Length: 72
Image (cartoon, rainbow, N blue to C red; front, side, top):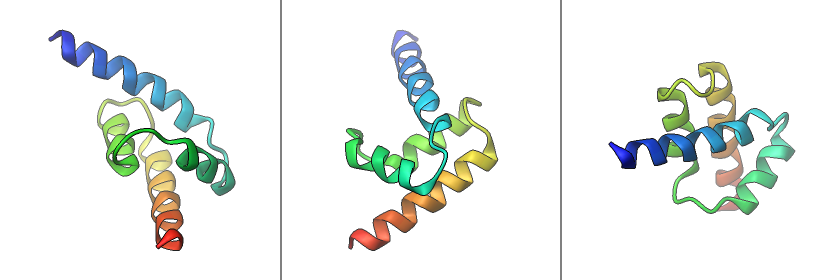
């Protein structure tokens, strides 16, 4: 149970960052400093926990995929 609380706390902190991403340039900056393993999974986790809206999650996921596709 304690591990879930820690992951929820981390997810809540991440969700606050995600909510502040107003445009694709902001998302690019977040990706550049991202320290996790999978930004799409982290976005999905925040959505599942109800920390960000489905609409925000879709926009961010689309932006991350676009950014990652251009980096290939």
